[in-house]
Length: 148
Ligand code: DQA
Image 1 (cartoon, rainbow, N blue to C red):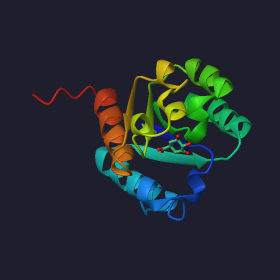
Image 2: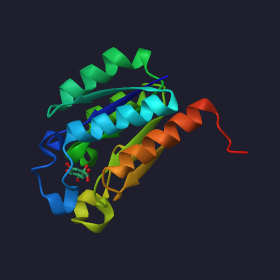
Image 3: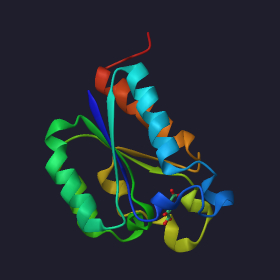
């Protein structure tokens, strides 16, 4: 099983960026944690970050045929990235949207995600652990676990 983890604009700056809001872990640290958890749960985690919407779309389109699910933190593209939303609506694998911060407790313009309607679900406000929660849920669902 392969899970693609996509991070959008400015998430390459995690660790330096407003640590009160986004925490102090760097993106490579979060990605390594996800790869380790994925390995334990039986999934390969493939990661990609770009500050460009076009590059994100190109990567998703060129790799999705080999993926079983996708986790994405679209950064600010969450709020206006309609081309990214259109791309995600066509990929045919489950998408989970993740935000480190609680986008509903910040500026009004952050409270709307144009990605959310094409995602299976969303996790916001749980910091880096939100990525791990998304990974666990996605793998569990793809495996068909029912915890009985
Ligand atoms: C973010 C929230 C967005 O509003 C912001 O533009 C980001 C990060 C988050 O993870 O909390 O870049 O997606």
